[in-house]
Image (cartoon, rainbow, N blue to C red; front, side):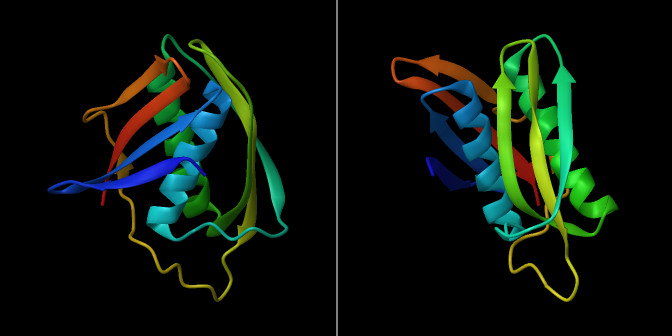
Length: 135
């Protein structure tokens, strides 16, 4: 996993990197799940996600926001993530959800994904993301 959790005054940030944009999106998602304590690698139901947009940063917000929504709406934890395709215009993949049941996440509740200091940048080694979440 290539991500780092960054503390901020009222928010928490995630800085992630990957050789590909798909890897950077996946590791950013793992950082989000680390903060919320909702990553439990085991079985579950696959849910396909696909978004189109005009830039990778707004697609990252859409991707992460949908994962938060699905966890809340289905009272579920995430057990697998696969980002199949990520470009400046679209992102597609699968998130596997498992019922939360009696599990009480030991993380911090996330209210929303913010645009504060949001960045998705190509680097010499691949891609780097920065995103802050409202907790």
